Amino acid sequence: MQKKIPQRQCMGCRERKAKRELIRVVRGTDGNVSVDFSGKVNGRGAYICPDPECLRKAQKAKSLERSLETPIPEQVYERLIKEMEAQAK
Image 1 (cartoon, rainbow, N blue to C red):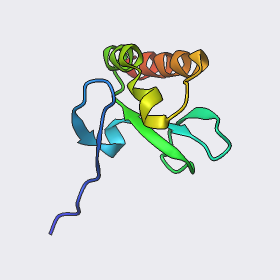
Image 2 (tube, rainbow, N blue to C red; image 1 turned 30 degrees about the vertical axis):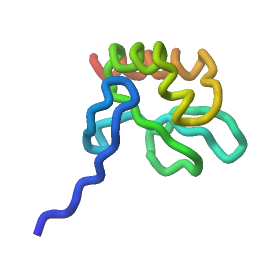
Image 3 (cartoon, rainbow, N blue to C red; image 1 turned 90 degrees about the vertical axis):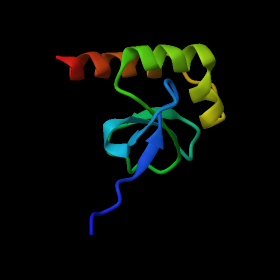
């Protein structure tokens, strides 16, 4: 019997993918928004594909802000873009 693979929905393209394929953005218990690569930080999480186009869609629609129920600082978007470019190389 195969183990069930956890699925999450990308906030940009709205596609369901394996949790390991996505990047987690988390609002911690202290209210700070950060990027969580381990997937284990406490707090409310939202997921995004490692694709800059998905990030642009999510930023334009403010879907990450709605999901995390807080404004997202510009630094978080910049860090996500840097990480996506690094993964592409």
